[in-house]
Image 1 (tube, rainbow, N blue to C red):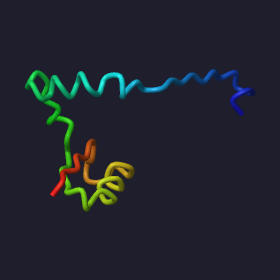
Image 2 (cartoon, rainbow, N blue to C red):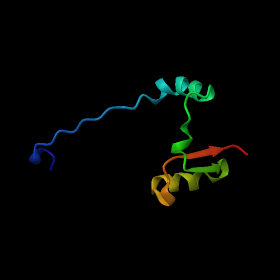
Image 3 (cartoon, rainbow, N blue to C red):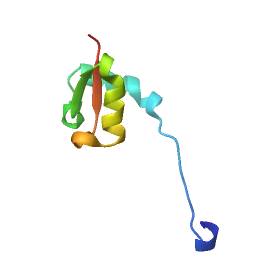
Length: 69
């Protein structure tokens, strides 16, 4: 179907590991506040529920943060 419509698909990988450490350091120093994107905070024991909320975009879910007990 793609060939018949002369479509081109492009993709790339996210370099999350490259930026994770510098971003975390900036968050810890208070230079960046990521709280605006966090919509749900759940205990680690509810990780499966958090994934379902995020995956199905239930309850306005954008980002789930899991916290240890």
